[in-house]
Amino acid sequence: MRKIDPRMERIRKITEILKANKASSIHDLATSLSVSEMTIRRDLVVLEEKNIIKLIHGGAVFNKPSGSIRGLNASRYYVDRDDDLFLDQKIRIAKKAVSLIQPKDFVFLDAGSTTERMCEYLPNDITVICHAINILESIYSQVECNIVFGGGYFHESTLIFESPQTVQLIRENRTNKAFISARGADLKLGVTTSNRYETEIKRAAMESSQERILLIDSSKLGKVRPVFFSDLRDFHAIITDDGIPQEYVDAIRESNIELYIA
Image (cartoon, rainbow, N blue to C red; front, side, top):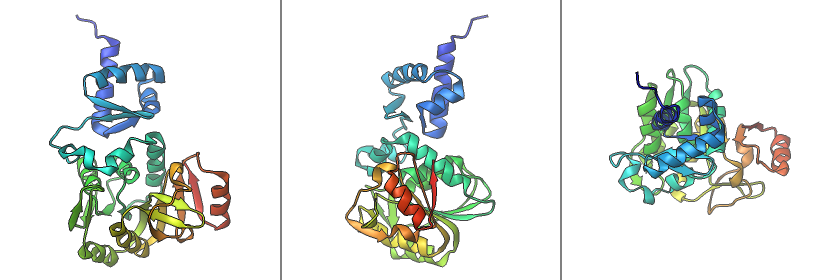
C-alpha cells in the first residue's frame, strides 16, 4: 500500500478548513492540526504559490472562485480589504459575540468583516436580520437559521443594500441583540463610520433592539471617521481585543458598559 505523505495530507486538511470557513488564523490552524505555527506558515506558502489561498497578517483567506459574490470584482470591495487586517482579533471578537446569543434569539447583524466572521459560528435555532450581501451569503452557505433580509440600492464598496424600506423593516422588528460595527470610536467624538447612508440603518437597529453590542477591534479605538452615528454610552456592551488602551478600559467601565476583551 502506498504510504500517505503526512505533509500533503496536512496541506489537504488546511485547504478543506479554509474552503469551509473562508479564512482562519495561523494559530487556529496549528491548534486544529496539532502542529507548530511555523509548520503551518510553510504549508500556507505552498498553497499561496498555487493560488489556492492568500496569506494575510496572522492568517490566510481561501481564494474564492470567480462565480462568488466577492469574486466579481474584489478590488472594489472595501470590506475585502478591511478583512485582510487584524484577522485573528476579528475572529476572537466574533466568537465572543456569538457566545452571547441565546437559543431562539432574534439578532441584527450589521455590515462588516467582523460580523461576517460571526456567521460560521451562529447556531441554527435563531433568526437573523441583515442588509449586507456578504452576511447573507455567509449565513445561507453555513447556517440553517431563519433570515430576514432588507434589499434596496446596492453599494459595491460596502456590500450594503440600503433603502427607506430596509430601515422601515428594521424598525418594525424587535430584536434581542443588535451587533453593530463601526469604523472608529473616540471617547469624546463618539462612534463613527465612513458613509452617511449607513447611519440610518445602524440607528434603526439600535433603537429596535433590547441589547446594543458594539464590535470593534482595538485598531479603530481613537480613530474618527466622517459620519457620527452614536455615543459609546448608547451601547450595553462592547467587544474588542486585548490591544485596547487602558484609558478606554477605564472610561467604558466607568460608564457602566459591559466590556468584553476577546
